[in-house]
Image 1 (cartoon, helix red, strand yellow):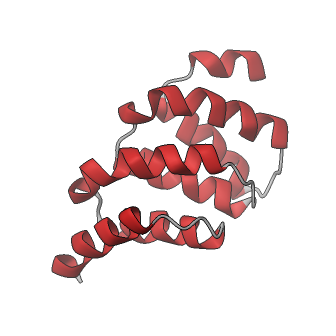
Image 2 (cartoon, rainbow, N blue to C red):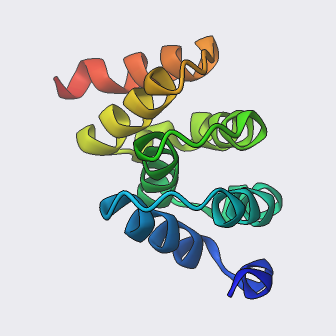
Length: 116
């Protein structure tokens, strides 16, 4: 199943890792393959797919700094499209993985204040 991941779209990627995380199934090879597939198309991800993807990585404690950096850069320009749960899940995933990204956290704070 892993070779086909290269053909996954953003929703396929988010759904796959989210399913594995929901049942706490840790499969490092799969998560690495997903990260490799996600990074080149990260700008195609919507807010829910971004939040679900990093949240899944955090739930299974799978570190992938390159993916998290790419996610942060993709999320910042569209942060106003995130709902409160997506903002919280994204920030929580970065915090849980101890992946500091000040620009992302500043953007999350700016987007969250009006909806708190």
